[in-house]
Length: 113
Length: 114
Image (cartoon, one colour):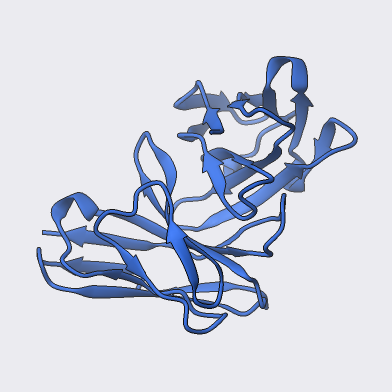
């Protein structure tokens, strides 16, 4: 089954404790991205990757890092989480061409206290 | 840069009634347009998409949307809603120069009453 898998689904952490949210896709997609969803703001792109070892900032990259060492994986790293990063996070993947459909993971609900 | 506006934050509709969700976009060229649905605790599922051609697009779950270039709109409709249609709906725009990136609207929360 074609899917994007995120882990964990829920995470509560303390300010400053480094964490990683994993994302994996099995569709051989070139393009992967991370979004955060906040009430009234919709989804905003954090980082994206057009292929292995190619990553770039989205609209709200501050406080986040990513890496793309393999085509299927695109982890999101919060080196020093802060309460304003409390949000719902989605990983998405798609083919690297215009107008293609994005497939989304189930989401990770992160709370930073 | 492209942008998307969903004017209605919240809509309440009776089961069996029709539903229309509004979406306006701002983009210099013809965009790629999408509607996604997010059920509680779930990820986003694609309802339908428009790239070119026929401006009336059919999607899953009985939804359709119409692209109107003159109004920069891509409104979503369903003739008769079911209780299972209660969810949050997002309109999104994809630009040709940024292949995979989607610009999302703020979303419309749909509540279905008996």
